[in-house]
Figure: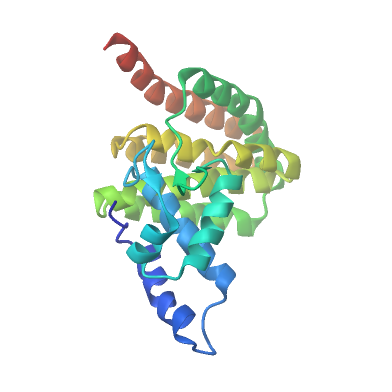
Length: 245
């Protein structure tokens, strides 16, 4: 299993010396665990860590060049999020891909919650939140032009952040928490490594942002619904192909 050579991994390596070397100005353990979490999440979403594979704390500590403590903290968090499964006396295992039934249930929940959140975001988003959404889309565009395998995982994380900020801007903490618990973007991006997904999603995101910035609730709700349905069709074809094969 190769570590993702990204800015996240580079930060982990840089912080490792401070963590293990006794520097009084070293990075706090919690922050380093967050960086390890982000690195492992990138590997999951870009399929560098394959579904069903086994991971151990020792191996990850050697690979990322950090002590076992932040690895353990990151894996505990991932277990709580349902992104890894603890195996008794054998480390952790990456869960298999989601089933079609789970995918359809997830899509239904998103269609119930996210268009309504986009509608509220168009009514309630602050200028600062709108500007953050713009920056996210600009970062996605830059990633689409970069290293394709690394960019795919990084794009997926920003995709998740974009949807989370829409929910945050709507001002309903329960809706935001419910969507976060689905880990939709992790599961969907793990289904297939396909950079075409990033290009198609960017235009759909822009439609949602334009409506939110224009304070047009109907257009924001419609744009979000159209994006979720289009995304659903893109991934649904994977299940169709698997069933036909």
